[in-house]
Structure formats: C-alpha cells, structure tokens
Length: 136
Figure (cartoon, rainbow, N blue to C red):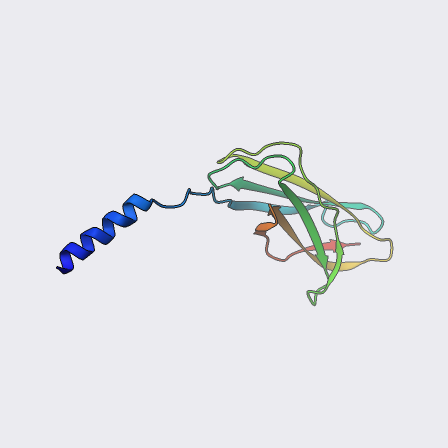
C-alpha cells in the first residue's frame, strides 16, 4: 500500500511538472585596479574592473550597471562614483569591463579604500573587497 501511494504521489508530481526555470544571473570578478596609483589630489582616478558573466543568460543593455565607492581607513563611505550602465550586451561566458572615473577632491590626501559593485536587475552580483590607493 505504501509503495502504491509513493508511486501515485510521484506520478502526480511529474504530471504537474515543475515551474519554468529562470536563468540565474551570476558573475565572477577577475580583478579591480585603481589607476593611476598614486593619484594627485584634484585629478581623476579610474577604478577599473573586469568580470565574467558566469550565469546562463545574457546581460542586456540597461539591465546592469557598475558603481564604485570610496572609503576612509575606518571603512566609512566618503564618496560614490556615478553609476555607469554600459551600452553593450554581455552574453553568458563573456567578459564585462568598466572604468569608473572618480574626481579626487583637492582637499583629499593620504590612503583611501575603494570597492566596485556590479548590479543586475537590482541584484548585486559583485561586491569587491576593500582595496587601497594613495592620494598625494
């Protein structure tokens, strides 16, 4: 009897089917680098990043953006770059790269930290580690 119930339940589940699968978005950060490092106060620093679309679906233009954040050495947020939404599609398995400009204020000096984020459809796919750069 138990075997019959198990078979009937299994058949019922198979007949209902599973909901349609949704493509999962994921990314793998390859590297980030600030350039130039050190940077002069009053000049522009480029936060450069490279990531691979490790998901199963293409990232269409307008569905993803990059943004960078600048922190002091106590990890307090002090600035954010403009969000940049590239105009290129990134097929699954392909590379996405960005250069996020940050204008360093004339009054800023010393060591600072930065992070880079990749956001797709309001989901953060990449949140880099804190990395340092020098302002002279």
